[in-house]
Length: 272
Image 1: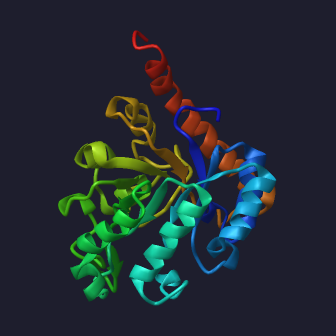
Image 2 (image 1 turned 30 degrees about the horizontal axis):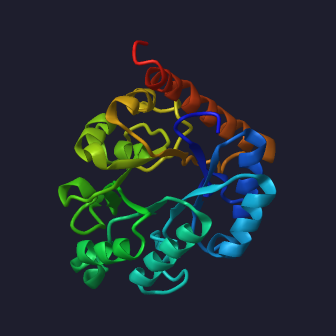
Image 3 (image 1 turned 45 degrees about the vertical axis):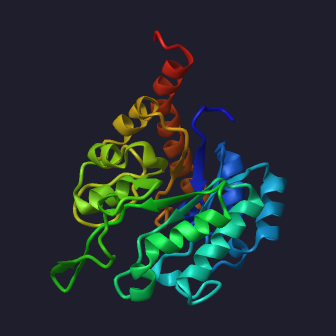
């Protein structure tokens, strides 16, 4: 790998193209690996298909995003515990050390009530995996703000062993990403890198195109003792062509590597 901190491409970043296209573009652009967003694309749910793509393109799967989105509530099963268990099995089969998990939706009452205990049971069956709970954001509907997660959008208020820091979500919730990283502390295991403008919506811009402290966060990782991976999770839906989409992915990768580099040189040479 070309950097101490692996820089991954989230397969969601190539939507509406399929999961297979994410492997191809990750290889073409030069990412260190892939984060697979498990969703309605059958390939994203199939360990054999994913392993075949990883081997063919020489792009390892280093993170699995459990099917926690509204559109994935029936992927594998309508039972959220079954979906999480299947995501863990998929990650273990593929050799991916990280499973990204959202806090429970507010209407998932049983799941939410037992989330911490149930998560610990899943962890006990997969001790080599990190289940990194992601910070989310409030949502505006009909002119009113509400929080669709229980107990809230900020997982640090509950407290977990591992977290995913999503900078676009920080923008949407109007919280300082560096402060969120501080709150996550040693539990910060994974980063979703994407920019935002703080206008109250989840934008997932190419880093550098918004006003979030993307560069500062990346440069701070070494000092935080970060040993996880950074996944580019950006929105390229408006790209007019494959070439335009790859240009966005390349710009995002170059941004990440450029701002991780000072931290990595400091790790290599403590006097730097």
